[in-house]
Image (tube, rainbow, N blue to C red; front, side):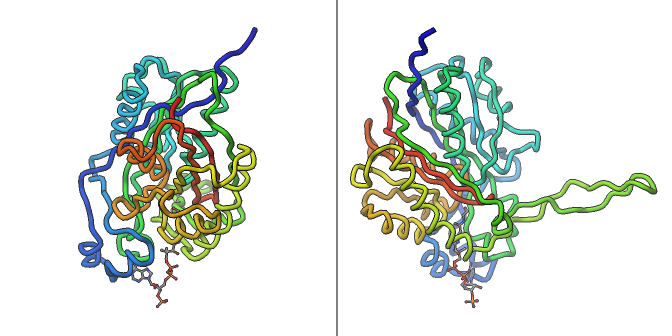
Length: 332
Ligand code: UT7
């Protein structure tokens, strides 16, 4: 059997943001902070927040539908749905709910957790299914509602995060548009960034006690994560560029996980990528975790910045610790 169409292309994008908007000025009435501190240390001016009845699957489905429409295919054509999230509505996973909400009845669906690296890890995972000839049409969504897991009294974390979802359609093509990638993890630094189970004992019998489901709010060693990002992200991008056999001069757009404008600037500087090639929407949305890269990608495609054939470097980094980069040309 001759296998054809084992190339990978990203052919559609979509995104969805909750309507509620919290700006720095209003936030500084809730915790001891200021617009000046947040904007100068992070670049963030406001963030979108889901209300208590909104779900990750709801915003992810809106983003997925828009991506499918842009790709010009039917939901019935979708073979695989991957939801990259750390904040599923259900610990058993939320991807199957998306499958139902978008009417992708022929697809298999599962969640993938790699925190803020989730989109890049999901892209690499999707590519493996396509390159082995198993699937032709994949929807990858990065979606997170971190606002419900943040301690809104903790100014060191609550000012950073926002909610949202971004999606892409990844298709099998003759010519391969995914030029290179590299993904990494380092569990020795796991305690730098956590949203972890909070052990609480539940006695069952005199000899047996079990835990009771609960999570602690996000904790982060900001300085360590910052140091990790500015060192590891340029390294992993260099590796992916090497695999793609291209130089930084050939890169049209750098889309980093939107964690901090200072990280974006430092990474671009280390790679010698000029600032006009760096896509940033931090000011509007803050850090939306797995959603940040696909939201930035979708906005740049829809506003005409990114054009068919442009070479994009996408790089995610975060809890795990995990990090990774993928180099691809937009569209077919
Ligand atoms: O998505 C996952 C990836 N996450 C990241 O990439 C985050 C990486 N880390 C960062 O972006 C930065 O470390 C932060 C933005 C989190 C913090 O910036 P920083 O420049 O490292 O500040 P810092 O933690 O060193 O704090 C400096 C000062 C401290 O006060 P003192 O000890 O100097 O008196 C903090 O208490 O700023 C204080 N501070 C604040 N002040 C006003 C911390 N948070 C705030 C705040 N408002 N929200």
